[in-house]
Length: 356
Length: 112
Image (cartoon, rainbow over all chains, first blue to last red; front, top):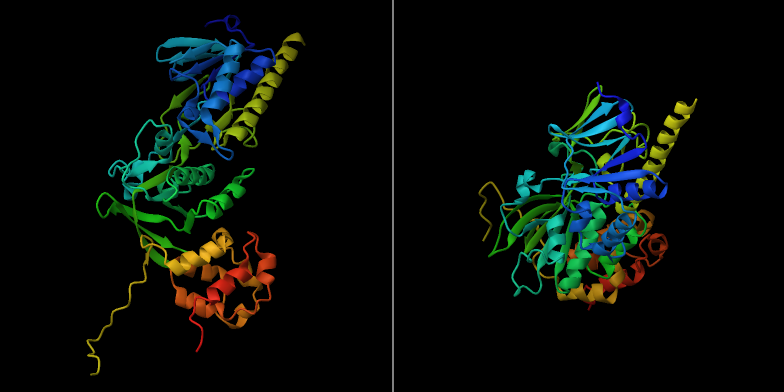
């Protein structure tokens, strides 16, 4: 049995180098704690890397990411890039971070900031993602904005017909994801406006169940999309997409406000993929394993309210950001700071016991 | 000649064809009163409408029917409006409903 002495109790390991991980690290580092970031990809940034611009103000995603990375570098926070962690082992009060048969790190406190995964849109077979090249996900469309992939229709198409489908893999018990991913609504509005900015003659339709514009200035953005950009919002879920005339897609839906079926030929169909867990915790008495999610897996369970960062049944294990459930960037930043404070309280409480 | 009775009849296709471009008269109404686009079919206009109690007038439905290109129905139903303006006072999206209804009512050819 190893002694717990060889773990530096004050050190915090953060698993995940996206916005949640970076912000938690920055706050803890500013409060004088020693932190390390373990990121499985070769670069920091998480999903933020794939965004072109951000709602509601259209700030360039690279500006925000650049500013975050700069602060992380300025604070000289040690980074373990390309480092996967697949389980944690409890040693004394602290943790060992394992990858396969190797210990890759040790820390007094571990903060999970592994974020979320995008729902695999191929599972909604009726929408034909992966079958028809003109069916994209919202993430694919961001890549188009970033010029990392071409538009799915030719340059001769000056007035493309474009459809957005909300709630793909969200609020859908048949997909095992009953939750609302909450930021797809406003993302679709943002993307619809961006498409209209690229192609002013385009006709853009959003197929929604209900629009959840919960954030500051989201509702204003929705109205702007309607009045200034001429985006048409149709209440009803798409039933299917099939090959149409030429390279177009033929889509069917119900306009539920009129109680009538609806047909439409589209040049591009964008599926607003929801947020799903990227891992599930398998908790054992002195170990925590990160396992592949299965049908119906939930996000990381925390104590008390969702805002709380303490992982259920595990002392010294915290969770930050979207691994606890869908969250927007401002929410992630606020949550990361709150979790950092909880971590600080926890570390102080350990010291108080030690001195007693 | 009387219609032959085969024991069944054909109903017209009820499906909306969104790929068909908007009618020029619909476009003219939308351009003359762009705030119509802000309608989100909440139904508050219809809930306060006095004329709607006795007639098939419901402004938000007229907006939907306008998008669907049913100018004749829209024109006919808009005639029921008494221009009291309660709908406009209550509309959360600030749609200029009275002007919209006047434009819609004008979709019908004037009576001889």
